[in-house]
Length: 417
Image 1 (tube, rainbow, N blue to C red):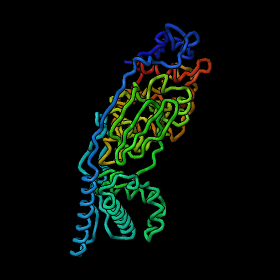
Image 2: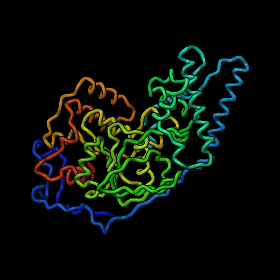
Image 3: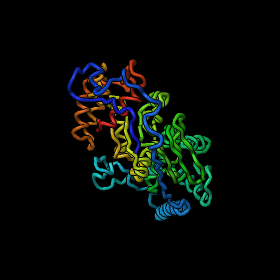
Image 4: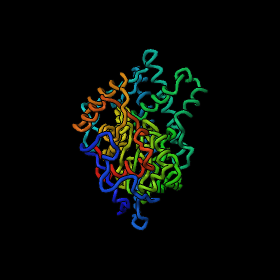
């Protein structure tokens, strides 16, 4: 097990002492007198961790989806032959809700059926769009039943531009229409978008000692502590992970990610540093979930002390009301929120910024969610006093304050929720 070298420094987040003094956070030594080292861990104590991940046989799955689409087509032909209005019926997932249980999600009632009928102008447009995407997905699945190259995958934006050059273009004037169509096709087929070849280019970034092996096609991605690379677009293709990191640190913003990377945070704290650049996309959420569930690494979140930062942490931890059918692959229920807490703002003497009407509205919305427990509710109540960003947690007199003091001490003394 790795050990901290700077054991003489202790950060105390207690209610005692001068609440406006940074010195009230230390005992058994001070920042000024502490001699820091290049790394916070002894290299000889690092333990390599790895995990092999079973991947569903892609050919079997693609054959199943081809059959599912063809069955739907036969049902439509049968309806037309019987002079019935053709329609698609499926559970739209809106009758499900959040949960604070380990799975992070539960159904709050019976399935809510959605009907898309070839009836009326709006209904015909939606029906035609779904039919067009089903046809495109079917063609793609058939063409790549036995192939594993990257050509199987296309971004949702690429599909949008392709459709702009086809007769259906008048139904897809905005990319949001295509995204709506793909989402509803996946609900109809009970699959994920990447299983039928549609992906979103990942915006997430990773830094740290990490090696990923991917299938379909086979390749290896090597991440480094001092450089960052993008989260893979298709996380479901990861078949092997190897790392010496002790934990995962998820930060809300790219600016903070770059600051911590420049401070050698992944090396100093022996961690994997991840950011979703704001609200995380599906690949980033799925990747964080994978590190937690397969490598059993602790995952910590560092977000702004405002309702939107809090919600971003909750998206990783509890998920959203979307993504029916594959939401469990995106959850990280064991994630711990290390900050920035309202208590930290008081102890570090950080000036709070007045909340806007939208901030207050967001707090009210969050308080009504089922996963909000007593601790979270208290934090949200205190948040009404004002907000602050991660960047404000900084003391110029202390070198690399976030990397060398705030983050490791919060984790060591379990000052998280």
